[in-house]
Length: 143
Image 1 (cartoon, rainbow, N blue to C red):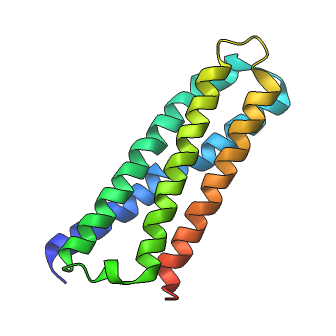
Image 2: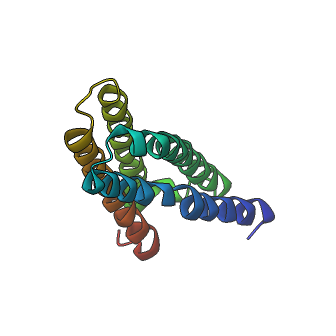
């Protein structure tokens, strides 16, 4: 293995662990705030930065994954597990954008609490599930 591949792989794993961990935090913060009935005061302070961090992390995951594929002369892109993982990253990005949109639309409203926080919470659980499937695909490489 060359040094470029190893460096990219380390970066890819670090972004996955440190950056995408914020998605679980989004679900936890939204659920906790909703249950405590704190409304926008408690949620907006944390959810905005966590969603921005996860957006940057998703972009970095996609970029480092593509660079890893380029480093091995496109060997990964022929495999369905790689294609499926790339599509799931894009799907996670779509869900992430929906969570940010729900948060932005809900903040000006007085009835921010239950509805918006529940929506953001369930979207975050969906993103979390997609990332779990990606991890399984990357490790098992079933096809």
